Amino acid sequence: MCIMVLKGVIMYLKGLLSCVIRDNDDYVVKYGIKERRGECRYRLMEMRGKNKPIIQKVFVMVGSDMTEIIDYLNGQFNFDEGDYDRLSMEIREDSLRVLEDYYSRI
Picture (spheres, rainbow, N blue to C red):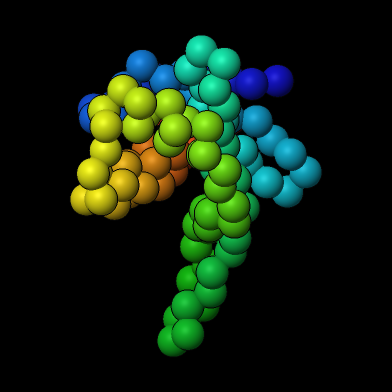
């Protein structure tokens, strides 16, 4: 089952649909627009402090395949080299935000 989540303020990814699915131990944020697809894969890890026995749960990106989405967006925005850095950051930030929003609801 794919659960849809709302998007926040974004620049390049505006208009893309996103959803989160579980795949064994992974959480997969899927993106789509028209016939193009992409995904960012995360795993929930427990991190323990070195000095204090505090355990925190954090999502770690373990994979990403956004090639089709990036190709589509390049056709829309005609990226230069600096735009790819901003797009990469936006993908990481947006996919983590989408996942954290999903996780807070389950």
